Structure formats: C-alpha cells, structure tokens
Length: 389
Ligand SMILES: [Zn+2]
Image (tube, rainbow, N blue to C red; front, side):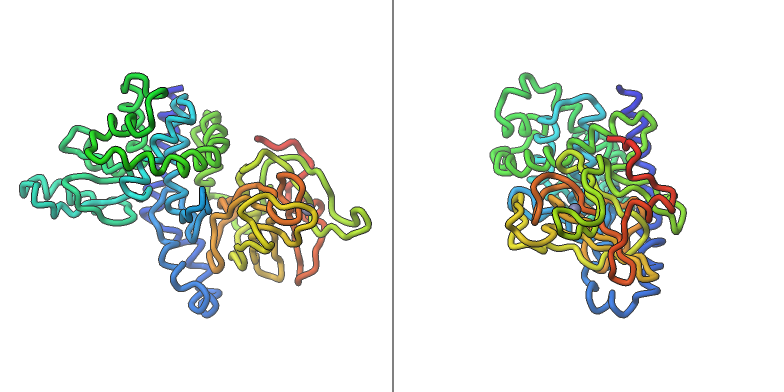
C-alpha cells in the first residue's frame, strides 16, 4: 500500500508542477483566442480564477456542500486530501478530520507566506518567503505557517518545499493524526487540536458537517484512484494527453435507458447509471456554455413531477456540436470556462426530472439531439462496454 501511495504522491507532485508551469494555458488560451469577445463579456472574473494553482483545479466555481459554496480550487485540494487518506489505507474519518482542519486553517487553500510576521528572525523570514516561489492560492502571514493546513517548517513539519506540495502536506497531517491515541474515538476537535497544536482547536468542530459531506462526496473517487496501482489519478487530474479532437466515455456506469421514444415521450439522450457522486468528465475538448440548476431546486434529489435537467452542464465543442450532462449532484465548472476532454465537470446525482442517480447525456448537432451511442461509437467509444468503476 505504501508503494502505491508513494507512486500516487509522485504523480500528484508532477501534476502540481505541471499546473504551475502551464496553468491551463493550452486549453484556455486556445479557447480565449477563438472566443475572445464572449469570454470577456461573460466570464472575465472566472478567467482569472481559472488560472488557479490547485493540482486538480478545473477553474470556475465548485460545488455546494453542506450549504456552503466551495470553488474548484477548494474542491481540488479537498480531493487530494481525501485521496491521500484512501491511498494510505486510512478510513474516511481521517479525511474528515483533515478537511475540517484545512477548512479552519486556510479555507482549503494553498497559502504561501511572505515572512512578514514580526516573530520571525530575518533568516527565518527569508526561508519562509521562499514559499512564494511555489504554486499557491493566496498569502498568509501567521508565523512561518504555510499550505492548506498551515504547517510550520520551524516546528519540524518539513522543508518549505515539501510543505508547499499538497500531497506531502496531507501525508504529514495523517502521519501525526494516526499517532494521536484513540484518534477515531475522541471528538474531532481534540484529534485536530492534537495534530495542529493549536490554541484555537474548538473552531475545528464547526466544520465537521461540511467535512463529513465532502468526504462522502469525494471518497469513491479517492478509493478508485488509490486502487489504481499505476499511480494515475484519472478521477482527479485527468491525464492531459488525450489527443486533440478525441472523445471519451463521460462517466462510469451502465446504460439504463437509450435514446429515442420512451413511454411515448422522446428521450433526447442516454442514461448512464453509476453510484451517487461518480465523477463525470468532459467527453471532448470544449467550452462550458452552461453550468446551472435548471429546475425549481437542485439542493436535493428531484422526482418525475419536477421539470428540468436539475444541475446541468452544457459544453460547446465547436462545429455546432454540444453535449449536455444532466441531473448532477454538483458541478465543478462555470460558464465560459474552457475544458479538455477528461476534465472533471461534476458528479452523478438525481436532481431535476429524475427518479434515480444517473447521468443523462446528450449530444446535439446544430441544436438537434442525436443518439449518443452511435455518435460515440464512431469516435471509438463503446458506451455499452463494461466500464471501470
Ligand atoms: Zn435521460
């Protein structure tokens, strides 16, 4: 298991560095060039957040979790924290403690530190400020604390370079957590406080509901990733080299309903059912034209008397081709954002006009729906083939 965790860590580190070197430059820049005017008008604020440093960031806004809005930078770091727990063979509660702690300490953001805290000597300040040279989501200034957990190099957590690696940060947290006696049985606040040596430990408990829901949402992907001995992290940071113009299966699961007439009504897409919160990926390179709740409510499962797609993501692939991903429990992208084939865009749910968890997937050409099964088959993707996960 440790070998797998090690490979996973390295794979993440590489992706983190890649993001640092080329923050979504390839997909977003291409789209920006083509769609400069609409992007500027519709999504100027998102354009800046899309260049976030998260190892798994897909840009834009993230998910609504326990009544709180988390953006994709936060969701990306949360997934990393949960996945490291799964890779180390820990139970989900470890991830819950870590997420509550990270939310309290940094709002789950990778914080650098400019060393301006008056408690630091000049030498300590200089070392602390080297954190600014790593990918980061913002700046903190508490002593020598850095990263999502606000770990301190002076306190022996690791070098600044190590602490600015989100995988190392999570590993360091869990190393100390499992050394806390009875960490599974004592209140979350006490466990977190023992790890963090924080004077403000009682604040951690406030985020327990959020952390529990996040863990439930992200654990299936974490487990799938941990079980993949190659160290690849398809559910989190999809492998980038999907050749330009290629299509992929948008989610794992079984085709439960085909395209065409159903109960006397047209069915404009295909239904693919997997477990709740199974990740959903962009089927091809494109631009998000819509990511929104399209029903009266999307904060809970819908039913057949509720109209609409529920949470819907729609992608424009150019050439008049669009795809729709409906009934999502949550989405991780925002309108105007460019996505690559394989980018995480949301999770399977049952919002809107739906009676069970599934993805309703549509392909449209010039606005008219076509059967996604032959469409994808002619592009090398067999939706009826057994899928992983
Ligand atoms: Zn459907």
